[in-house]
Image: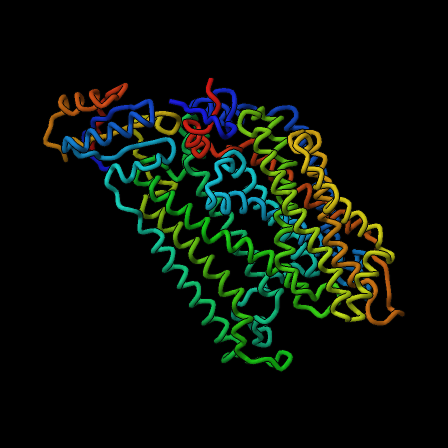
Length: 451
Length: 176
């Protein structure tokens, strides 16, 4: 029995039944890969291979391969790290925060957004490990009993907090994602035969769908959402403290935690949109990921984009109002110094362009949304670059002022993460159910369009 | 699945029919073995008389373990095992311990609670699932009766199922 609301737009269109949900989503997993998928996958692998070469060289020779100098000791590596972690935040936000707020539209997009989170955090971790310079001693960041002079980690350091925050975030996101996947793996298992049945059977943990198990599953999901919500806020807060707890003008700002969290949600939603618009058209999922979903995400983008805009303006105001000459110089230099072009790109992409989403025609247009989602991601990369690089490049002694130019290894390591991200995402999209079937079925009776 | 048991089960097509069937069957005093659904049906656990899961309590206790682990670890390392003078700050700077304490609380809570869920619901890659009908992972619902725990015989239970709106009725026995 299907009921159509006269107030809310339907979340699933074209009279899909629960059986259609199973068939439409499982079809992607069961059929042979499409030509579009094969081409994309090959391209991802090529990028991964080239990036892999650059990353290997960076590890083998050292981070001297990057364009860093004595003044600018942190640049693309940490920019890319913060960018990827930020992107990762939308997945948890969609699955946890929107679950707590009972936003039913999350059901069609949460699975892919969570997958995006996990892959984005892996990409972010690549830069943490790469910028250590000696990745083979990367485990030294963990507090384990050792003979290295009996020294323990410094738990006063925001970088140490980051180790715990990022690894906890990755683990909890993975657990949350996997728990959600279990019932859907069971659906695929019951349709599969042979070796596929064995594999999906194991992945489904032999789920039987009994009322008792569902009841526990819901309790677990709710508590996981409850702990993941403060977690997602804490992670980017701690990432921002990598900068905020330092004494560099331009970094040393108490506004950073909320400003970074808003920026993370902003860029994450943009990346979800970029991916989902491609997935919906390649896998023909237009009835599940509708214009309505896109519009809801665009509304969040305009909100968070405006918060980010206010943060930029506040930083400037405080730089002047504080009366600190160094702070004032850092900001004037940021906007009008040698990196004015990066600052202008950031302002245009992050503050001006999302304001177009106030127009319904723009936020319901696929072409506009796709274009603007990419613009936002470019803008958010520049935001991190501007904060990191422009605050460093003109330090307290004018004789050591410098400029950062990336080498092919800076670019290559960044490309590596793109290759890695898209390889993982394409494998996920082909072999895992891209939409949470069980959750979409719960809204079919109440929120779908009648046949 | 328990071995050597005989079951009668009915397949239902609609969630609403299933919900009224559960109420109808329980009012007749018939003991339901279990209900199988393709998605979480809101209110079904209440209708079946299941009490709310204790898993959140387990999650809380695991979380407390995480808090204690984090604080003990950091206080012992920085305060007692190898005190370091870091910018003249206290050896046990509690405010600086907040982020890691929080992270480990969340980590222990999430892993512990999910692990408990897997153990409690017997979810693991090697067990055999209790599947009465493969369509319960698609769009059908199943109510199953265990003959051993009901006084009524198979025919009576079948008629109760069909009266309550089951579209198909079948039996399943699992030998030892």
